[in-house]
Length: 245
Picture 1 (tube, rainbow, N blue to C red):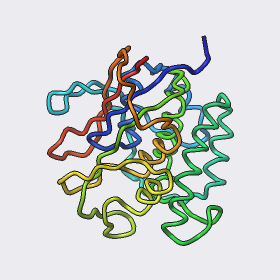
Picture 2 (picture 1 turned 90 degrees about the vertical axis):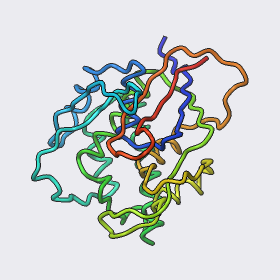
Picture 3 (picture 1 turned 135 degrees about the vertical axis):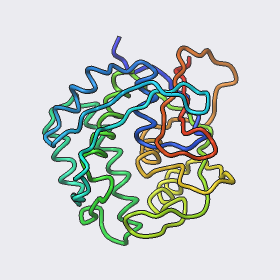
Picture 4 (picture 1 turned 180 degrees about the horizontal axis):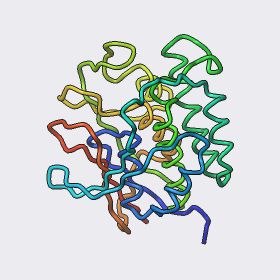
């Protein structure tokens, strides 16, 4: 029964990031051991995966994180071709490779536009590092493992103000996220809270997978879940979702 037929409804009331997405998909039943095995097959120094249950402002959620060594942040600035080469070498199921590449294509295009360069020449900073590659492959793996073919997202919340990142101070949404939102016409709701609620990876996952912005009038909830984010804001750092039919 591997016909990719599940529908995922995502509640992005509190934004979306790569690790929140992996946590949610694991909470919805994606196979933990197979995921870890998949990540270990990547030809990079992979970090130990830590999966645990946490409470975020009274919401139970699955927290997925990578134990990175402290001497990380050598900042490997990989190109899109280099990242794709790493993904190809893992010999994953074609659907997984395809989705991971699609997410990276969307990020590359958005970053290239932000830096006024080409997709071939753009160098990934944060998203080219080992942990981001692991996150994106993890998301692609979980989507395929859960056989999700439809994704419904009514809107995505984003904060205001500015954040500090490798390029200095940036307005929220950061340029890459802004470019993805406008190109893919993702409905955004601004919330009155300072901070970045949507990361480039989170935005790219939506652009790569969303099939509808409207929930059916009636639907049955098959399974609910929540993925924990790392940042602490006034609102709970959780991405909630459910498999529906």
